[in-house]
Length: 381
Image 1 (tube, helix red, strand yellow):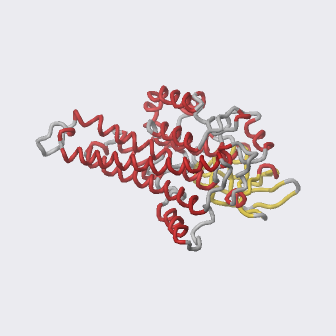
Image 2: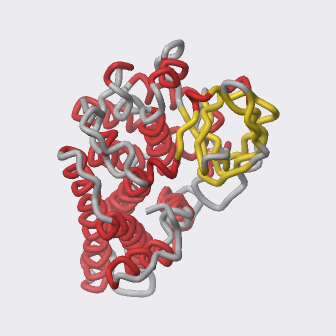
Image 3: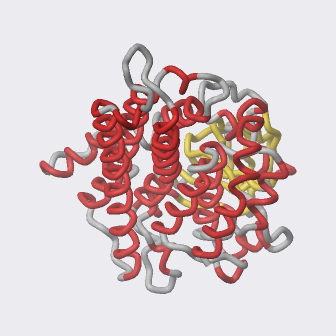
């Protein structure tokens, strides 16, 4: 399935490219773009096979989101988050999955991990109210994942579109087209089967021989690795853009009529290319480890889980540094509104600041695990 989807995404490239600037200006991926990507199977890769999906590996998840992001960073980010939403939803009880995909097979799921409230226990479930910010792609989603602290700990609650409203407040420097707005729930009933206990997932409750392979990958590091995918695509796209322009673009105030003839330019491009290569090596190392352990129904050690989080952060940092180098190599024209390079730069730098990708957090987690110190940073490893 993944090869067919990647081919379909490549075929969509002219349409996605043409729509990217407008999506950036309108702060949401256009409906027709989402529909075309849906028809191409872009959002089916991580869905369970019994609901028409591909049950794809974590590595395939990176392949798909990076392929879209190489064309349009915002659409690639939404692809990663929607496919991540599918992957999370597949961890819920079957009745919840049927609620989501039974009536609407192509339903999209969006959400956020920061808890809100209040929430109260009632017969058969919970009454939920609250506001959740930075929910990428929520405007196209039929279901929301709302995190809340319940009597049994932190959980995700699945809420249908009829029970929440979207507040349009996403005004940011980059990743504008992701429409990562706030959604608000007011006194909605959530039945017990639409509750996923996160602390149990963090502890490896999903790693059982009975689960399909991809859904027994270590929960938190899989989600963190997934969102590194769009950055890989942005890095590749920026590198290609600068190289493609080099034969016809000079270097101001020098004797070079073609950038490609300058040794200094060549060195910058090589430095950026090596950084993009390093990003891929780290991200795919994490994905392959997670897929390998999932295939064996083994829960990776805390050290390996922390390393996966660190790999994702190091990958993202390599991409942002590559983009900085490429803009020096390309020159000030790359910052023109008409240049896709400035949008790649903005998108990558905003995405890199996602709370689950911050290097100072993930490297501290990894460092603590390496030296055997107590993890005082985050329970989400």
